[in-house]
Image 1 (tube, helix red, strand yellow):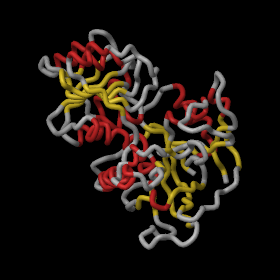
Image 2: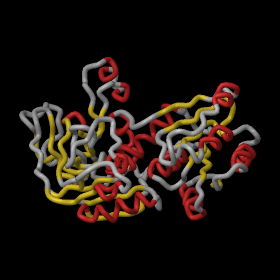
Image 3: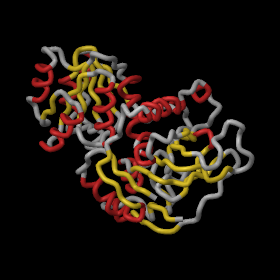
Image 4: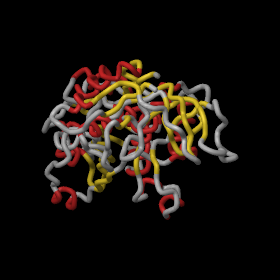
Length: 347
């Protein structure tokens, strides 16, 4: 099968480790399913894997990618009675866990110590013509949801959903600042927050990306600078926003802490600009700011996103679509940071 994989990891140029070629088609083990991938999307997680940064050691060749949608091709062994029939359209929930610890039994798999995502450790990824996945990770896909739209949901939109409504606890009428306006998680946050009746502000160093944020529904978008916090506080009547979603890290951390209201929440789903900003603990404790890390979400939350997309209320923003064989071009676009939403590969 055709696959996009890491032929090596580490070094100064992660894209030099990227390869596209033929690898063996997996044989699903008992309790697992084989999915014929029709669309997959890229994430910065893939760049980190090429750099050699992963929750578990990676042994090349390692197929990249966390997100995929397609059709059930086969099962390993006898499928469970409630398993989607072969041929069913599905989106893949890309998280695997132990399945039996208290967190897993409570449907909070993100707290499982065996938490892994596709393309980590011994798990091969989704950027291929076929992907093997536990049968319990298949989420049926209504005909109204395209494979391309579905492939955007499992990482970026699922992370955004949990960041907004679980970790930040946002509700209609509240306010939000989204740092880095045009990436996959950031655009997902803007779209989902506006659907929920939340007032959104955004930042970007790029004027065109600020315009995009406003087009997506942000009340206003600001450049990243020392005066921006004052502008955000002013826009919220001198209070500050209820929550900030900061996927950037070092370049925007000071702004996040200054723009959030006393008692507000700064949610951190990533750190694409650097992971170690000055903590400013004095500001955090004096203003009672909560800093909440987050990643991914539950299967139930993914099902809610699929249902929301099926109604037509949510349409994931896709900035570019490429054939699977053209993954080198797609990765170069992502690495350059010139993103307008998600990049999708079609198999």
